[in-house]
Image (cartoon, rainbow, N blue to C red; front, side, top):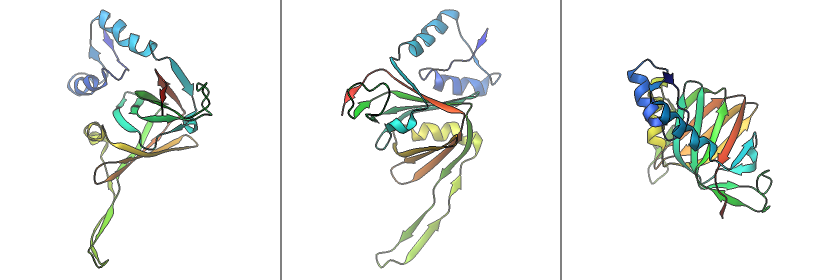
Amino acid sequence: MMINIFNRKNCTVFFSNCQNEMGNGIMIRENTVKTAWEWRITMKYHTINELDHFCFKEAYIAQICAVNGMFEIVFDNVTILPANSCNRDIREMRANELVLKISEPKIEALVEEGYKVYDANGNLKQKNEDITIAPEAYADKFKELEGCEVYSIEQENGNYVISIDTEDHTFLLRVSGSGDTQEWDRFLNK
C-alpha cells in the first residue's frame, strides 16, 4: 500500500524516497502509519489564518518540507503575540517546534538576493545580481536553510514572502496558498 506521510519527522525520508521510487509516496508498514499520525494528534494548540498574531523575527528554521501539494515549515523561537486566540496570558510568549502549514501551496520563487561589495573608500568593487533557484534544487536548498534565522514573514492576499538570513546571504521564499495554519505544543516564557 502506498501512503503519503505528511509529518515533519518523516519529511526528509519522503524527499529521498520520492525521487527514487514512483514520485508520490513511500512504502511503509501499517503500524508505522499509526505512529506517524500520532505526532499530528499530540499538538495542543492550533490556529487558522492567524499569521499576523505571531512574530517570526529572530525565529529559526528547524525544517522545511514541500512535497505533493503540502508545504510546512517548522520554526523554533517564535514569538506568540498577545492577540493570538490561544494565548490566554495576554502577553508575549514563545514557542519552539511551531509548524506553519500553507494550504494549497505553490512555490512561486526561491531567490538568493543579490548584493554589492564596496571598498573602504565607498567605491563599488563587485555587484552580484539576484539568483533564482531552480525548482529541482529546492529540496537541497531547503536543507541548507535549516538552522537559519528568519527576518520576516509577510502575507498579503494569499501570497507569503519569507525572508531568511544566512551567515552571508539573504533568501526570499515566495509561496502562494489559500490559507495557513499554525500548530505548536507548548507556550514558553519569553
